[in-house]
Amino acid sequence: MKIIGWGIVAVALLFPALAYSQRVLIGGKVGGQINNPIGYPPGPDSSSSQDRILFGPMMEVHATHGMSVEFDALYSKFADVSSFCCGFAGASAPQIIGTSTTSIHSWQLPLILKWRLQLHRQAISLGAGFSSRYISSASHLSATQQGFIGGPTVPVDLRSSDSNWTYGPVFAAGISFRAGIIRLQPELRYIRWNDSPLPAGKLDSFQALIGISAGLGGANTRF
Image (tube, rainbow, N blue to C red; front, side, top):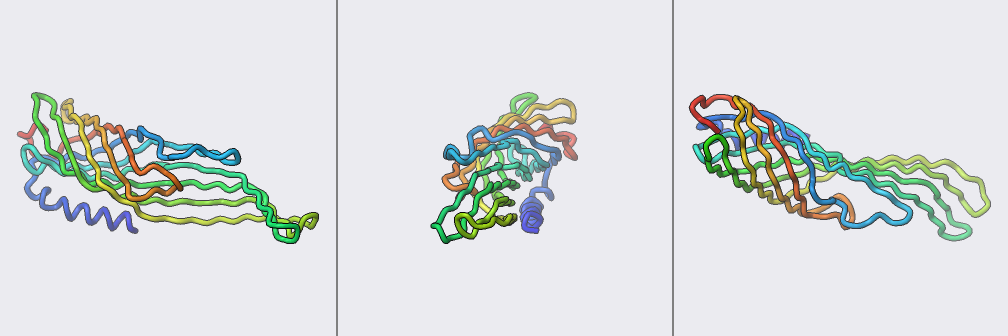
């Protein structure tokens, strides 16, 4: 529901630009994160993997000849983290031995104001704005528990989930190519998040994206 709420806010902010726009581009973006989001190597009893691919819909509104506003909703499977857990708290204390796994997913919702410099059939763009990120995680502990050393063991199966929001400024630079009604938009982005879903995770995010979109309206507008 929070994602829907942020989308409504974005549309509300885009509405004045839509009212006076020369062209609206609607399409999708795909790319990936260049740097590793995990800022530490896994320990000897743990492992991690990252799927750095980002993809999702985009909309760009050209408010004036040299200015536009873009809103994206980019999904990413942030990371999978697994670790072997082994707890010994004493001869008479419970012990848990098993494996803990956590899957983390995210939605990035950037709203970017862009300035464009027209160069014949392509345009160079620089942008700045704000991005929020909705992060959800699901954890699973599969283990056995022993009440005391030498005692009987019982299975343990625990599942939990969590979610939160992070945010930060976003800066972008790219170029737009025209191929008929299709627009190709390679782009580099930098985001500085205020928090990370992982301990010691990196707050800096460098991304390479390409947008594929089609224009609506503004027949006399090239970009």
